[in-house]
Image (cartoon, rainbow over all chains, first blue to last red; front, side, top):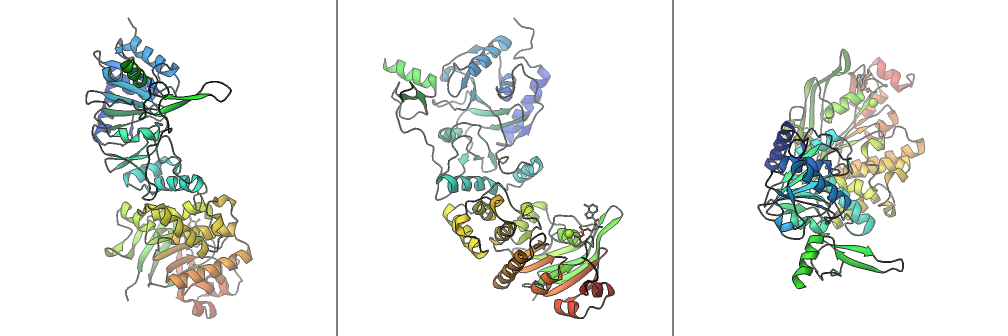
Length: 276
Length: 256
Ligand SMILES: Nc1ncnc2c1ncn2[C@@H]1O[C@H](COP(=O)(O)OP(=O)(O)O)[C@@H](O)[C@H]1O
Ligand SMILES: [Mg+2]
């Protein structure tokens, strides 16, 4: 089938990445440096997530790839094809059937189980970067748990917009220790970060891997008088009627017509099939 | 009363060159110590050693901490020292941009230290920021403006507010009025004097401007080539200088 080793990367590289993953799981939320490899796709296409998936997949796995909740976007399709070709693994769009799910910008709506691994593609792993560009300083802040700056960012949000306007990549504290960027998922997904599945985060360009083990405490940062809210559009899905799922607003025509639909395409389809 | 700060035998070298050497003094609660001397005499080096920004090659800096009593801040752990510098200490830089976050609003700049020590109530942080803007004579309506939109004098006053909001007991200042217009300097000095008196602050002020120490400092140390050549009560030193170098300083023969 292929001129590649299983899942493209050579075994030595995968071992190196697995060591970083294990270290990440041992120190939840801590950004572990790793020697990111050139992948046959541009940065920004999830090279970090792809390397983590490559080091995680076994021939028996069933892989699902989503981008913004959808299985059929260019990015998701090309990553899925990549692993079909280089690892020959089975793939699926059904969340429950997948053993490894690589995602960009969403956590599936269906509750994940202990038998599953969720791999996130991460563009910028450092949550303190926004206010402190010096890497030596952010590393020190993490090691000394000097996280006041995170609240300065939230303070700025409230003072400018009257509410915490951060809607994506909303910072969390993991296991009462490290402050972590959950990647650009909507803050609606933040409560789901406490889950049964293993969560692995890969940042290719920035060469960092971090992780959240199953059932780990994950708290979204906030103020006493401006508590965290997992907000979504105040609508039900126009296709499946779900009132509990994260919605995308879709513009239908240039006359202002629009509809709200589940961003998780598998969740939406499963619900429609069940009622059909 | 026991001293707030005991400095003993501080020395810092840059290779073979002496930054400062053999500096010892006590600072008592509520006291303001001025450090004067010409450019290159070691004032900033000394101040940075005292404030924990530079590691001295020899000597002790014993600070009377609120929790543990007197502790040598030179040998204490870095996390402890960083905690001190966010709570009991304040540092006012000559250039406001070194002491401010230019991309963060005035309110956020003032609130940062409160959030750093665990305040998680937006309304309370905001109220404290407004109160401090008022105390440093900045219009509360500017609370959401970034410091880059402020004049040099306002930036310096904002830096002072940001430092004093957590009620520190010891303030280090390096040329706080340097680089400002004369009229702006006068207003800042006046404000500083009021704050120091009202809050009962202890402070160490480095300056090459004798007018600054005349107005603010209870005691004075005169530095030359990294060493203290004369020290005493400010008025005594300035009105009756004993050391030849101080006499030159006071008579303005030296361009400092
Ligand atoms: N980072 C440095 N590296 C080498 N020499 C330095 C450094 N900083 C200061 N010095 C030297 O140490 C002496 C004291 O400097 P400084 O403490 O800046 O004096 P002041 O603040 O009184 O102008 C000067 O001779 C200066 O050139
Ligand atoms: Mg200096």
